Image (cartoon, rainbow, N blue to C red; front, top):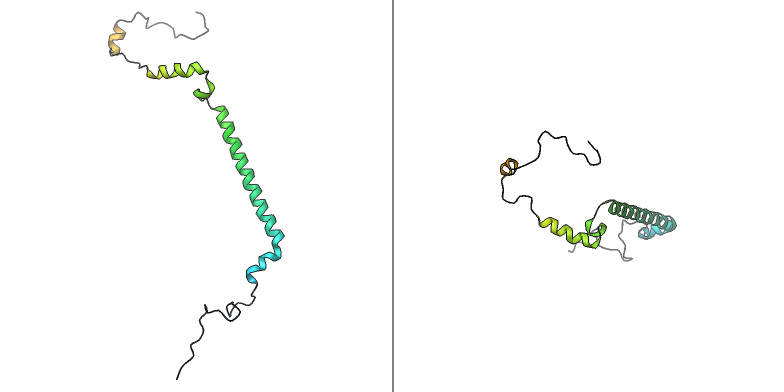
Length: 117
């Protein structure tokens, strides 16, 4: 005696669709509203493009406001700036040694450029 095994859900019926699937064209039903779908996708793309443009403009404005020596200084200034970076503040003398040899008046008023005393 051979018992017929019941078909599993994954076994396709002769027409290539599952038995439980009511509408064989369900996969293509979105095409009914294709214009709405296209409009929605287009709006999303336009919105993304707008956001990208705004972000790029913001970055460009930020770049203009920042001081970038290689861009904003004349050519000769770049060399001068490299030389300045090579200089060091201390030359081996201790600060107490420098203060003891100083001719500056410690009680003098603070220097303010453009103000005459």
